[in-house]
Length: 490
Image (tube, rainbow, N blue to C red; front, side, top):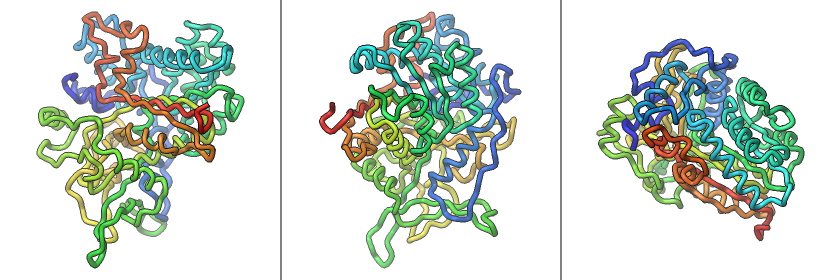
């Protein structure tokens, strides 16, 4: 375990660790256009819709997605302490930004993913078949560049048959990815960034067009690295029935009060009716406790001391969803899986993300408003609750908010832990498989195990032998979904 845990648990935690004050954004990161105003409506919307709007505005801002180009090569660092110091300096140069493992461990992270893709393609595709790759949430294009660099360096003939498309909701990041790949020599013949929402079927239209077919002759590889944690979630809560009736599940919705919806949003509970929420709830309740163990008392004390978690005496989030009074469910990820399958019925999905995070949300965590149908306030945190963190004003240090609605819309990162087992069960049960019953085979493993098996992993080690590619971010995992061509898997 890397000490302190904050380095593993939060995108901004290295800056908190080093007590770094925010300074002007370094000139090495191309600025993005300012975010558009977040739309509001007086009509009730699902909590996931509110989160989607808030995050779209957040990711359109200039700060969130940083650049690790100033980080020294990992082999040049003396060891773990030097690595921590270098990462802290990278964060200090980019106030309000966060860096993902694919940025921090570039180019080694991308090389590991490229080796997986190349090996699977060689094993399953006909000789000379094209290689199609789709990356959801491309950021500034670091991972795409490193993957294409690795393929080009290892197999020029395969690179010539490769088409790589990205899908992102941010116009600024689409432009940034195009610039990054262009500067690396990966032009339009190989790389195409597209703008769209991966959770909606029409968002994939540009991707299919970029790859040249609605379903290529060989299944494409779909990458979702550090994406699932920022996809919208919905919240459900057990509510007491009236006149002694049994309790039932209710879904959280957001409403705006006042004339024209101008008052601050509040959360209300309504009878469960959304089919995606229902599917995720069934998968959650069937799964049992999370595979990731809860943090120890010592770890919770460290998180609290560094401002990365609630007081250690606060009730911990429940480990077993069946015992929870309220749950956050990955409905955005479910919609993304279905939309991807509609665009490419046969595919191989590879996703990496956090499988555990400390929650800083109070009670249910949605925020404000009176629950209906006899709902009661919950003192225990919700199962799967997120971290809500961001600067309350430009140039100010980030703070953790007690609820999703407490954060000014569009200013905070809303970061969820991913239950990879839940997503695997959805895929195995045919979610997103279409009418032809596409078979899905899933594998869940820790990220460290994935990269430890990659060729050349030793190249990411520091001089002391400490290898952050496999020893840092120990609270991350990988999901592999192989969706075959038909019912019988052929």
